Length: 344
Ligand code: TRP
Image (cartoon, rainbow, N blue to C red):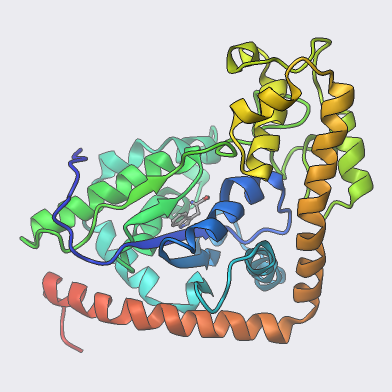
């Protein structure tokens, strides 16, 4: 697999990212994705997608799929993604995603896709029973990104391998068609505290909406009381907050709480340890809970307002799809030409 940088790419810098439509958004989604999406608007042209075609790879849910999409779109806007500056849309509204995914199916090699660890995790023991779509999921993801010739992709650590596949597909497409620099090789943007938010009860497990215990996560819709009680009951140890990063070794739960504080206040971990080092969790936890509540309450309120006002939300998504299509259509026309497809 090739990962050579492609400094010769001359196209515009553009951010693309996507989130699955889900109605259980939590702090991990906020710090790992939404907060970063908001910040990137100052530096890049940004396109943010709700990936409903990816959602159906694990099973149908026709009654709820649209409301799940609205929930994530509302979270984008409530967190601060500005639909005027950025593009917010639902994936299946722009049909070129599936068209490019098919072309990429003919570029990606079986061996490349078979290596994807997320498929192995999601498919579990009986991979033969999973959908072909679940296997093909990362190829559709490559199409999402490259349909807009996006150069930068903010994602969590767990998506790094999918991004590498996108780069390999872009590179092979360019080579196979003798079209150097046709597609950029998209780069992941992963850095910073908040890259990995863990369970409040077990610092080795990711914070997840599928954890059976609600005490393991802060939901975006939790009120201040719920946040306070979850943070107070979060697992720690009898030692105080350490004074430096070395003191976080082998204290996964403490590292997680400090990381959350740093991410939510957009400060460095060192800075947070400088303030709280040596103090007990009786001091640190209430400070963390208050900071979280202050950050999340307005977002939760705005999400509630937007999800209740579907007309406004749907208008935002329609406008977003129109903007996305305006970028995608000419690129797709170029792709069809390069591949030699019939000029219909
Ligand atoms: N697979 C991503 C996730 O689960 C979601 C996604 C789909 C995505 N298409 C994308 C992320 C394109 C970045 C770019 O988080």
